[in-house]
Image 1 (cartoon, rainbow, N blue to C red):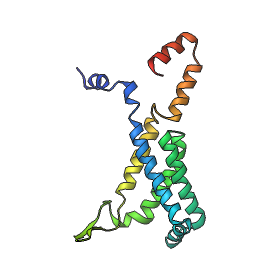
Image 2: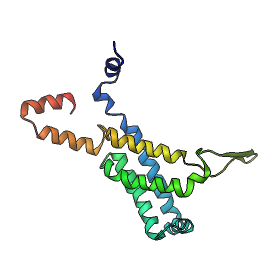
Image 3: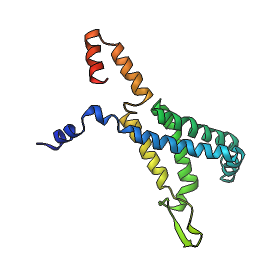
Length: 175
């Protein structure tokens, strides 16, 4: 028995299209959480950080980042237009890597000391940003999956484009 046939029997195509759901939830939630934190602390605080990094148009970039994180994160969670929203999300991650995290090295956890107050950590590296990038790229290449807005629209379009006999078969197979 070859490896591929064993794998396809263990993970049939219909079930394997659910794999993106947990990835979409964690990537989308992570982006939304970061966007919400920037908004809750006051966009002017994030604008100040961008200005301190000597980035052009700090006010515009601050709002573009916040909106990318909130809207892009939501779109990823529901699986809507993932290839479209992934582009600005990738830009946000790349800018974060090269302007903030790269000088801190790879590791996202920098344990500096532990005392009676607990653990104390240093500045995070770019590890987490790379994980987000990998998740986004996996969703773009693999598709948003069954439990997604895009998946629902594709299934509806596929059923509408067939005759009634094919529609019955597709509905029965879960398409």
